[in-house]
Length: 209
Image (cartoon, rainbow, N blue to C red; front, side, top):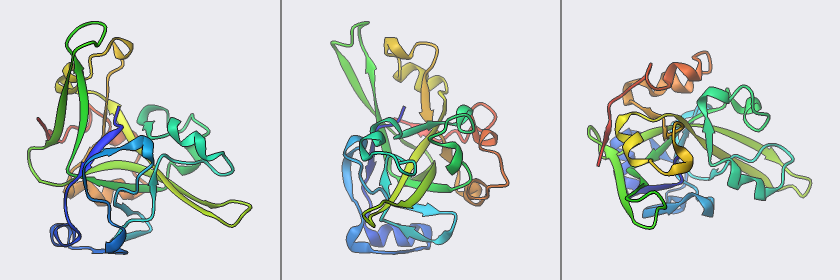
């Protein structure tokens, strides 16, 4: 799974790297360790505004008319079941790219997890990279706008199976979907099926630690 990330780049660095303007550079989240359960506003690129880096969406997709506490269950969305889950199916064609410089996971050194080793997983190609996401926007009865997203996960590759080895994950290890820069438009295009980007069919080979 993917609950902890890093976004260590400044607004100027992101603008230069992606050749995109940022909608509100003062709202850009920059941190070496980001906890998804705080529902942070990681920078994303929306399919509806592909030329802009957007900063006013928060992590944890909130389906329309659901209580905000529901977000703790939607930080991640499994690519294999997007169409089957009522929380995600309405947003399956709302695509986004989540910008990170790394994410974190912990390897259990013993079966009980009393000793753990934290791994930082980054791209072996670029200092910044994209994770696949889906999003939702709606307005509640009080007029508040909820802009939220989930990071889409897939079957873990061999490296992530080693890292993500805790007992409850046996046989079901996961990792976020990495989107190569040359494939950003393909992910944002809803005509392309999400499963086309699932491991092992889609393996950008970007992970290092």
